[in-house]
Image 1: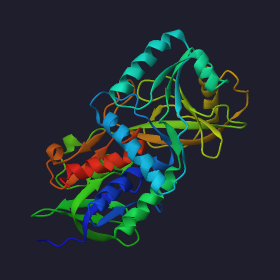
Image 2 (image 1 turned 60 degrees about the horizontal axis):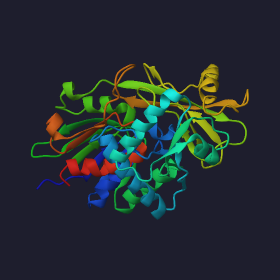
Image 3 (image 1 turned 135 degrees about the horizontal axis):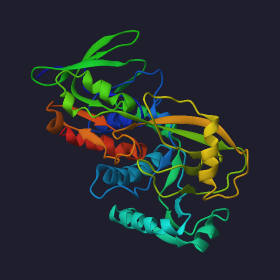
Image 4 (image 1 turned 120 degrees about the vertical axis):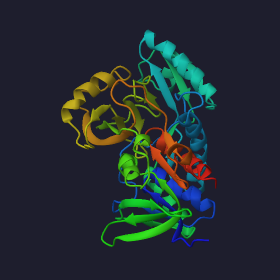
Length: 370
């Protein structure tokens, strides 16, 4: 039997890559996680809402529906076990006009189909009793939704991988892989000290770089690499007291969940993200975008004062659809798709990828037959 440097190599040390490494470590494998940046979680994982999603919206039978609900349950248990901060504050999905009420009913039905616990419909009076500054005609309550310290979560995953004898290797970009005769891979890593290492299994979870990484795996069929689209979202922070204790979401917009409100773990209010498709990742925040934010937010919070929003940060989501196209499911592609034994390639892991991350890791391990 061939000797390998590691049982498994994971490309990408964001939340999903680290969760994949953790899932493989739990199966007794020696794992190396390669990360091109100088710290973990510097890409998609560091530029999101840090929301734990209930799993309300996703199509019946989809990976997103199954992995979000399972992943959320696993995530809360992991955060508890590792003393990582979170606030299971709950979420209100609000209809601000009569013509949106029917959409709430559809979301409620989908949430129950997806086995989301504790969902209930609220009248305007019931919603206002919870959040007096809210404007709505009706709402849904998702008590399982929350916010958490995503970086603390990733540090805990890293600790588990290293505690099991694995390695998280920073400043080490993936440069290519070649399947070996008899199974396994030769993986080329760059950086200050370029190296080649061998492994039995390879999992690619590099977020925005997923397509480029797949293209550098010898024998990966180009027709199985989906087109990449970049969905930029900007966030604005409220200068002043947070108006709501719970997450506040409008009904979803095409291709995203829409600009929402959260109170972060520090007690500050943040609004976002919006959605604009860009040609390349771009993290600038245009102060002029505030005008649209004021207009949108005042639908559910009429009390938003003029001049209270400050530009905060932007993220870019690795989308598999362009403007006006339906939002597809996660892609977790094994040998049945690309034909390469021992390889799982992830594409389009955007929301609810952070919530789903632990379940995505389990799914990747399962698809390797582990």
